[in-house]
Image 1: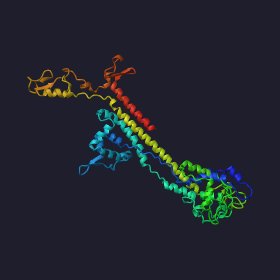
Image 2: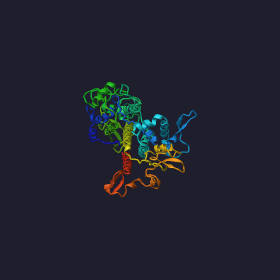
Image 3: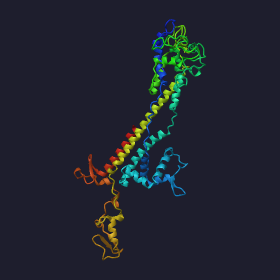
Image 4: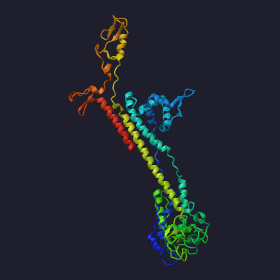
Length: 500
């Protein structure tokens, strides 16, 4: 917010009796305006744009698609007339906005997986190449949650369209506010871009008795008015820092460049100082404090109650009608909105940079959590698939080996090995023996649907072992507990990641 402050020091200075300009009369005023004048100095370097680069997450999309079902993957690719795979376009009938946003990412990822090495590479990258199908299935929801959060962060950055000034546009606005568009001060500064009318002498430009000239249009015009004297008065320096210097205006123009350099001694050139929003806002607020009013007139510099001709009266600006009841109006200060626009632009850049850095950090955290989750996938203790009824385990160990050994003796009762097989006289077949003749093989029959943890239920603490674990006051299946804890840990990690 721009503050319009009537500075007590300036009011005291402005209350002097009618006297000609003296050395140092307007040092206080220039001190307030100087930071704005210095904005156009040097190369006007803008603070480095630190917008963070969003991390590459293509391999995470590939991992997520790799863990998905074949049915899901086939939705996003198709073969062309040359039997080459291509990405499938989203169906026109698709109504889900979420699917519409993600479809291209999905289809591009599925297409990458048509490379025979892609799946192997990504599984190896995340230490999943030796994981079992059950372990991959167990971790899939966690990876999907992380990748979905990453997509939301990445897409939000890509889809945000920001209308911003270029660095050169920023500099142009500052030059316009200070020097009417010129890069620096020269020998022919006067004119419409500086004070709204053709070049003229100090009395016409700075006194402001009519609307022909605007002495507060640019910062350089303000400084020339309060620090320069009327043409011919060459022995006073109202802004110092020295005395008796020649800083007078031309008869029909602003002071020459060499005289401007004397004026700038009181406000030294800053060759290397970066432009920031804070610096510009501070310069604006400081310069505004140099402006005060008396009645309906606006003033800058020492006013002797008689005039501002810079010769027999003070070297000041008197702008008639640009105040209301002792409060200055700033509509004519065209430099002000120019500088404020630059400050707003740089402030937006800073906010966008900070937001981008935060998003990049969040994505990196999600990537780290993904790697942590995949690194522990082998800790998931998945159940061993029992043999089916047609593959009852036999005394020979492997159902396949026993079956092959016995089947060679179909129709040959005499050679059917009795230690491993039994001969069916009715069918004339040599069949593998069951582990316990006539007994139900564990994991098959009516009890196959029992919950795995029931085999541990009811055991006292001393007997809670061999695949069981005592938890609280109950004996439970240890593999069930491990899988449950892993799932809870990764879900909790996902929640934490999305909070920051």
